[in-house]
Each structure stands twice: as C-alpha cells, then as structure tokens.
Image (cartoon, rainbow over all chains, first blue to last red; front, side):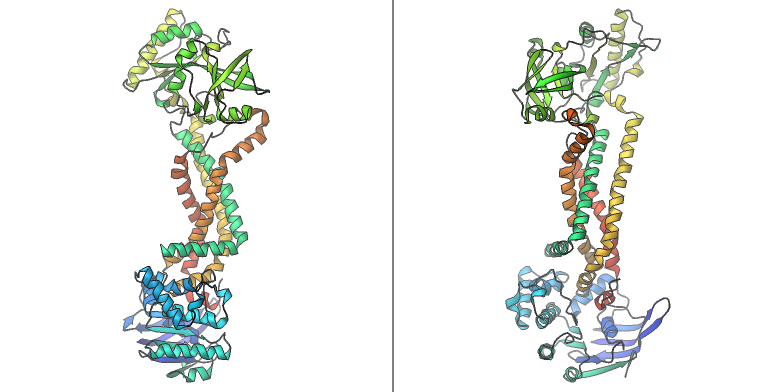
Length: 220
Length: 410
C-alpha cells in the first residue's frame, strides 16, 4: 500500500542543517493500522507529511499503491491526495468560515465530478457515522474539541480514501474523548481503511496493529 | 459553481473578520476608481467622435480668416454676409451658424452670467446633442422668431431645481424665453466651441452680431454621399468667391480647409490623451502597491485555510483563485462605488475650486458612458485586482503545506 524507500529529509537554514529523517524504510500494508511513536522532534510528523504528499523528501522514494509519487507535478499530487488520502490533524484544521456541512464537503469540491445530490448524500452519511448529523449548520467555533475532531474525521472520510493519515488525532482532546475518537478510527480500519497515526499516547498506540518507533530520525 | 460559492463564502467571512484591511482596500479602490473613471472617460472623449461631436470628421468649420498680411479678418461673416456664403454653399444641406457670448440670465429669481450660444436650426442637425426632455427649435420657429431656448440639465437644475425645466421661463436682454428643450450635460472637451455654452437661443435674437467685433462660426456638414476631397474643394471655392465679391484678399488655400476632427487633432490634445494613459497607470499602480503591501500581511491570515484546501486536493491555481476572490470582492465593490461616485465627486470638487457662481456652466466629463464602464473600467478593475492581490495570492499558493499546517505562517 505505502512503501517508503531510503527516505531522508534534511531541513536547511543558512546556519543550520537538521536531519529530520535519516534513510527511513517502511511499508504499510493495505488494511493495516500503524501507529508512529517517538519523542518530540524525532521526525514523526515529517514522516507523516511525506507519506501524505504534503512535503517532499530530500532523498528517497515513496510509492503509494505501486505508484511512484516523487516526480509528480503539483496538479497530479493534488489529485492523488484528493483521491487516495485523507488527513486528520491534531488541531483539527477546520475552516472557520464554513459550517460543518461545507467543511466536510470540501474534498469533494476538488475531486471527481459527483452530482450535488450524491455529494450531499455522502456528507450526510459520514456525518451520521461520526454522530454529528444534527450539527450540519453549526460553525467550528460552536462545537466542542471532540466534535471538531469528528467533523475532521468525517471530512477525511468523505471522498472514500484508501489511506487515512492522522497526526496526533487525540492530542488536543481529554482522555474520554480521545478513546471515542480511537474507537471511531478502529471501526473505520475494520471496514478496510488503512490508517497511519502519529501519537504520543502509548495506550492508544497499543490498540493498533503495529507500532513504529522513531528516534532521531531513524526507525528503532 | 459550488466551488465559486465557497470562494465567495470564505471571502465574505474573511472580509467581515478583517474589517481594517477590508475598509482600507475598499476605500483605496473607491478613490482610485473615481480618478480612473474620470481619466478613462476623458481618454474616450479625446479618442472618439464623442457626442455632440459625432460628426466631427464630416464637419468643415469656417471661423477665422486672415488677409494676405496675416491680419485676422473680423466681422465679415455676419448676418447679411452669411446668407451670401450659405448661398454659395448650396450643395450642402446643413450649415450651422454659431455665435456665443456671456449674457446675464435671470430665471426663478436668480441672476447668473451664462455663456449663451446663438444658433440656427441646422446646429441641432450637425451636432448630436442628447435631448433629455423637449426638442430643439426648428427652422420655422427661428423664422417666426419664437422665443424658445434649449438649456443643459445642470443649468435646469441650477435655476429651477429640476432637470425637467420644460416650459419654465428665463429672461435676458429684456425678453422672456420659454425652455423648449433640455440636453444632457456635455464635457468641456466635447464642446463644439472653445467655451461650453449651457443655453442656446435662435440666432435671430442675437443682438451682438450687427456689431462688427463679432462674427459667426460657420460649420458645414458634408453629406455622406459626397467625398471629403470634393467637399473641401467646394468649400474652398465658395469661400474664395465670397471674399472676391467683397474685394478682400484672403489668405486661404485648399490645405486650410479642415474638418473639425483635423482642427482638434492638436499636439496638446495628443499630449493629454497619452498623458491620460500615464496618469491612469500611476493611479492604478500607487494604490495597488499600497494594497499589495497590506494584502501580503493579510494573506498570511489565510495561509492555514489555503494549506487545508491543498491538503484535501486543491491545486495551486485553485488556491490562487481562492485568495484572489477576496481581493476581487473588495475591488469590485470599490470600483462600482468609485464609478458611481465619480461624477458627483468631480462636480463637488469643481464647485469647491471654481465656486458656486459657475456651477451651471462646468462639466469636466458630463456623464460616464456605459462603454467606458464595460470596455474601460471592467478590464482596469481586473488589472487592479491582479496588481494588488496577485502577488500575495501567488506567494501563498506556492508555500509548503506542511510548514503552514505546523504553524509556520511567515
């Protein structure tokens, strides 16, 4: 599903050069739920960003569904992200100007031509799944943290991606809410979605199929 | 369509949540477009056969003649003389007579010194005035000495507090006249004469002409069936014949017979036209740079939104358009307001500078034409929007998504 070959990521400024990832090799199989753990600054989010095509590696190759994505142009990358990947962020990253319905609908605006009726149906389906179908017209500022994260999950699911990349999805939530979100992700995984999740929480990571531990940019 | 609605939704939201920037951008655009509309209208007036001068390239003007010593011949085309000249020009259907002078006009208990034109009925056929109310006076009304006048809308407004002053009375030189027609305001620069009249009276009431210091301006409209060369030759022969009969040696040649358009094509006019374009460019560039600098800082507020959209499949072009939509929203609103305010603001400024006594006489542009709005203002608006918002939008759409989502919004 996802194949990372010798990926290195170096951040350069005028004075400093920091190696965030150092020749990482990793494979994630279809239907797998993998968590990435490690101390702050070890490169977890950088690895997830590269897997999500949000950032470019300095060296190495990335294959998703046997497709080499390294040489893709911006338009192709955008299309690939839209069709194959879904993102869940620690701080939700909902657009404050849009209500719940519009936020969830967002990925479909850039994707395949789907009728308005079907788009609406899909949005309602995923909001039903995250138990927020009664909050369609609410804006992010009118929701609790847990509800915002559910909206973010619904947004990640709406275009039926094969892979969900979650960057500390429970990081901003209390433990009860965190467990609810994890249960939701576990359900999605059981339904066949591949999930890669960055987390600090050992208990949450233990619930996943596999834990990848990073330290100083290397897999332990 | 849906995506455009989303663009506008977020643009509107950001406008409401960044009022300082929105007000600066809006007011900057309003001020810019007041000047832009003015300059575009002036360029349009200079570059085209602008009403009432629609026939400028088919009008031959006879107004100043010199004798062979270079001395101006005055008063030779007066009331009796002009009928002889017109007899010589019989191949032309429309020949207008025009003489203008300042006259104290009393109306509605107000007295103003007003530039008044004495014209014949053909004047209204040669010059394409836009009548808002009523009609021009006819040849029969001139012959029958009917005391009617045509005035401009601003004159009507100034004297009678209404644009429709039809039937109202004005008095000058001891005689009362009825307003029979109201014409749309015209610009200084499209006036048939050097100075712009706001009242026109049948020439038969002209008490100045018998005085030898005054003369008529004679304009001949060349019929469309006649070639311009033939018309000029015809005019040349007629004028020569006229002066030969008067035993005056006039310095006149075929080359000196010019259409009104040719007479107006002066270096000053060209300079004004090209200077107008430079002014237009500066009017756009300076505020655009101001908005650009502020917009660059403001756009950073939207960096996160753009990064989210790109993470979920928006391309760079789509992100660029997303940012531009907010700028365009403000620029469109500002340019519409600027276009609507252009004429009133210009008039207020004119009144402040020139004083109230001349308010019925002055009109820099008269009015704004639709063609200026659609062919001039709309493209200029897009250029202004691109100048002021394009660079920040481009820069933000090129930024690294991961960095922005991590919180690096520099």
